[in-house]
Length: 255
Length: 281
Image 1: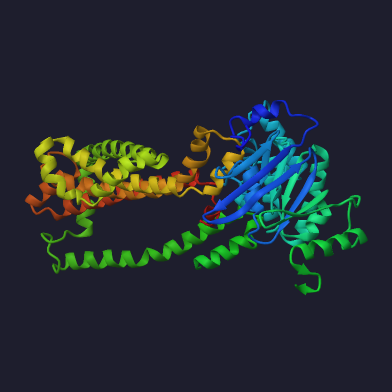
Image 2 (image 1 turned 180 degrees about the vertical axis):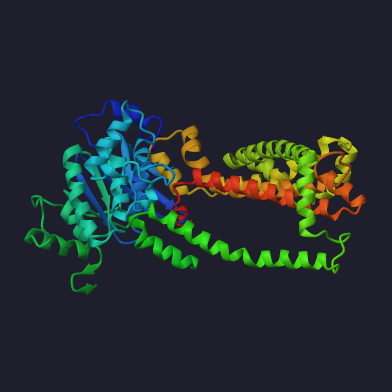
């Protein structure tokens, strides 16, 4: 499967026998061009099993392009991309199928026995048990995003891709969602790749923070501060300054 | 109340208890509906006065009371029910054939590039034909029996359904198709769970258009050499200057049109329950 994105049909087969020790995702020399613009330029990335990685970068730096490549949604990539295990995605907009009730959104494409029971359990986990039979358009923004998370997690993915899933939520809802994501991550143990433009969000959640620059992983920090983290923790403050500089912003203002 | 106001209300207070909404809207519509009956009733009244006073001779237009009496007679004698049955059968047959053709072709064209290339140019060209102008050809090809009438209805029905269903399929949100890919849906499941339900609202718009045009096509077709049905009844009445019968026939046409439209609305309500707009009706 090297040099190709795992196609949807063959991915579950790979999920049957994941190499318990190896990384969940290995990217080597990934290049993606849009016309004559090179967005990803021979990018290398390894994500360990169960690791929480945050991906930062300026607008247009290729964060979402990388996520789409990992999700198998981009067929025009060059280079090696290997994902060992199944992948699930939660997008920036919840993208629930509006004509399916919340529970049926979760069971969509779920082939395991007792899909309905597992969907109910996943909804309970995100606090939406009583909204199982609701139509998606009647959910609030936060509820819809939780349903979207539940839809991704009910598949028990080896790699969970989160594409700025909290950016459209209000500040309070976002804090609740951060806790929820950490709880779910602890309970299910998938590797997570979180694409975000929010430096604090990355520092609060991730084991490792990457900054995309010039089409590659330009900077990389490991966050060792124990969870639950507070944004004013001294270690995080130092990291934040470094991160902002890497993103071309000094804490006092634009560079 | 303007649409904007309705929407504002919907987003604000009402969303907390959506079940409350339709009842309130219905009672308001009923109250408003009563006011809307006043002016038509006045017109009918004036019409009756004009007829009784001799101002409006019955060879031009019969009096409302006369029309009502004639309608009663036509029903009792069985003339009207028989005529309706014949016309209804033509519409149903034509509609069924046209719907199968229109939706079927839209599926083929909508679901594959090859299908689109093969079917869409032809449909777009045929659409430009004034299909009532085809009547002379239809008579030459199929005679003057039931076939040309049913086929004319079928032809009229197939285009709105084709165009709307095709546009509906192509208008399905690409982001949902991406979701389907990340959920590992196969092509058949994608069509079943995403594409077809996504196209349904537009198809239902096409359905309403096509039912409207189906009655229109029937009326035109029945003016040509019909020996039974509503059109025949109307044409026959013209020979005898029976304007009352003509008006009864026209009223029946419009009632049938309204009934089929109500049927589609009912269908829409059931099929599109998931849409928030429907809470505001």
